[in-house]
Amino acid sequence: MRGAYPGTFDPPTIAHLAIAEAARAQCDLSDVDLVLNREPLGKSPARPLETRVAMLEAVASTRSWLHVVVTNQLHVADIAQGYDVLVLGADKWSQVLDPGFYASEHERDAAVARLPTLAVAPRHDFEVPRSCVLLDIDLSHVSSTAARAGHIDLVLPEALPFL
Image (tube, rainbow, N blue to C red):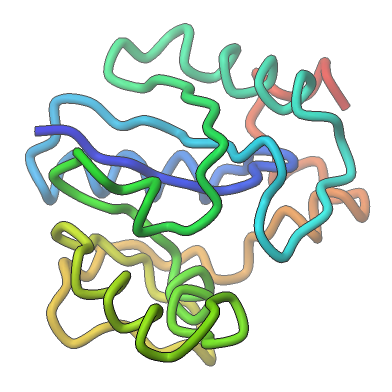
């Protein structure tokens, strides 16, 4: 079974890896793909795509089950197509439900209906879907925003040379 974990990973944090590991264990995944958009929907990464790919490849290089995929797909439902599990943080789930990212609420509802099994990491102040695998981790205090602000203790060691 394969899982897709989309994000900007700017930079990849200890929480990103913990979420991938929890999804792998709890959903019995053989592989997890860290999926980067060339132009992420609703975000402007601080680092270029090539740098984010290099950071993730360094992280994945010592984990045979972890892979890096680059896509042109914008919506999470399109990214998840063909995967068994979609791995998300609860904050990303709120973006999936936001009608502002779709042409209509009907389009949003159709996208949500085609999602595979969800594995969701809880995060304070964000709801999780009712039918999902709730990942058994609590790293809500970790964010890429904090890492970019100088909390390099939150960044995965393999990514540090790229900062």
